Image (cartoon, rainbow, N blue to C red; front, side):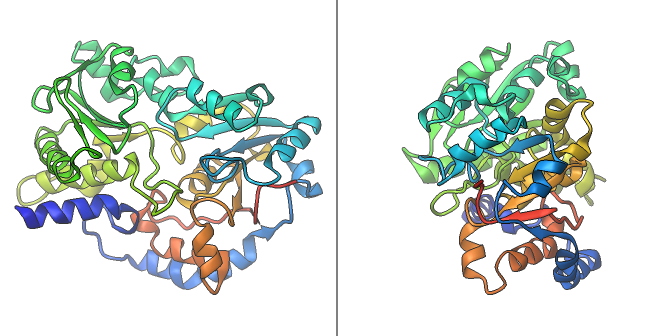
Length: 377
């Protein structure tokens, strides 16, 4: 119906403020909201810059987010090029962790375009690269585990895929990994790598051409996929882009699809729980473990620090991976809220922890070890 359609579209656009499913605010989340300010005051430290002796003494490896820390999508933030240069002079290992659904080569080209030298970084890891390896069942060669669901499909030669795409090389991305684009009715897997096109191998439905039709096809496809319990691989877990209007990203599709799977198979129709619905959606990138396993291997994680702007991906990911986090607050996704809210960064963090049941934190209170305004020396 048109009402359910409009509700679905709204949920995808606003996923960051929606709970997956219908779980009420738990007492734990409410308690986190009440106590977040004191937790923050007790545990994070404001630093003026990356040249802080404490940082340089404690950490050998700097895990760096790109968009929101190093650049704004079109140009480097002030002082970032110098910061990278100084960290290199200091002998620090720098590893870029990008949630881009594209391959590493794309990130390298972006770095060059922005004035960086890709060879300054010890590794450049993208969600798109890891996901591409998962689609070939050889992610273990990168240093992380394969997804057993995909392993089973590949071993059975069930390699038909339906794609929510970026509109850039979506077909090449899946076919180069050995998969065939098909309709949702014939698919064995859904790949979510963008929020601009829907590709079934025959027709490409474009949001830019006809947005209403795009949302209609998306919802119809999600319903069919959910009914069939198709697994979904999300190649970029970000839910919104740190851009004007904070437009939705593939992570928002993953959250909405997960809710569709659950609501189609929960009581009284079936016995699926919200937690078990998560088994059907595999998200690759921060805050999930694969990217950190590849970046750090057997390194001492107490000597590594995650530098990021996004609480839900960068800071949650660092905490989950056992590394400290440095939250960059005045650039990136929370910048406007930090400036506008009376309590600044502390207020933004408190709000996040108060709603953490609806995020990738899954109810856990998170706190960065350090806070800084910008990624500057």
